[in-house]
Length: 135
Image (tube, rainbow, N blue to C red; front, side):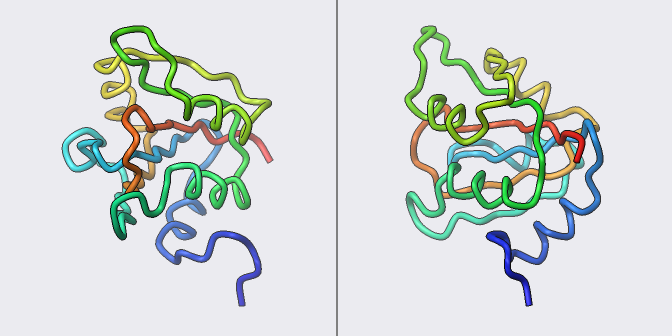
């Protein structure tokens, strides 16, 4: 029986196949997961509007994986979405790189993106691309 905070069988399977430098996307409910994640394994978790949130999924993933970097989608107006602070609180040791929308989509289309998770998150710009770190 699993005792960690992540019990989703497919997510555990896909994460177990990741190595140092591979990437995992946790996307809000607005993100075009099917068209902007290349050949990555896709997991659609959206249960209802707002459920689960990106940060809930991130917390579960952090219970089983080490991440060394995060990339976020910077709004065109230069504002900083509130959720960026939540990401930094959850993963304080990781550098946060802010990419414009098209650079973010490009990063999510690279071969190193191994897993893409869609959530029910309703906040915009609540997408985080995590780079797997060393153990």
